Image 1 (spheres, helix red, strand yellow):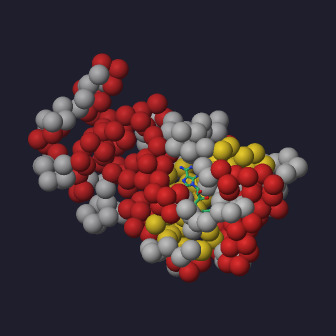
Image 2 (image 1 turned 30 degrees about the vertical axis):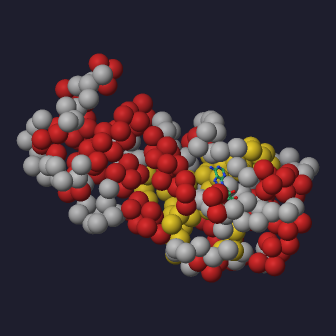
Length: 271
Ligand code: SAM
């Protein structure tokens, strides 16, 4: 869809891009094809795709053309109306109107591919809830604000390394696939974006039933970066949170959990 077509489509429904919903519409067709190809390539059929924030349906249309089934969650009522008209009679399209942060996740998640040009305002909470899920998606291909993407791939001691890096990398292999300049969106956002791809790690580092607990542990431990971990974990760990590798976070969690099992309400001695 060109910028002119996006404008006309919105105007015909008396809509304008809503900043509060992070509405920056992708108008670069090559980029849209690239995103869809990255999501589907080398995966066997059937492709079941969960799309977050379809907007005017740029990615949705390409996914349907390629033969995927798409369940899309869109918060904006006006856009939902446009999508319903556009894909009327398309049996492989299902629209859920609502807030993805409150929506039920597809089940079983492992059969699904997650795709979306995520609205910047919800990318942090959305990713945190993704990493707390018991099961991993088959693949996750999402566009994020570049800074958030850099936090996801960051390594220990880098400035961007934090709880999001540890939570994501404990379950997924995380990769930045492409930088997207503001000019590929209408209206152009003030920040750069990046396309990231997440695929489940071959080995299970954190058992599914412990993921939520692990994420809380990591997040709380990072909250006071200045304190060395030993003081909070009541054991001889002298380093700060940003110095531990993901593997070290996983073993610290296992050890502390052995001493204070979650079912007994053990809180790792965090202070
Ligand atoms: N996918 C479209 C594209 O690439 O052109 C639109 C992307 S736009 C960056 C983000 C989309 O997410 C908008 O359609 C917006 O209305 C929708 N959105 C924002 N917050 C949402 C939420 N909490 N739940 C579901 N959709 C949301």
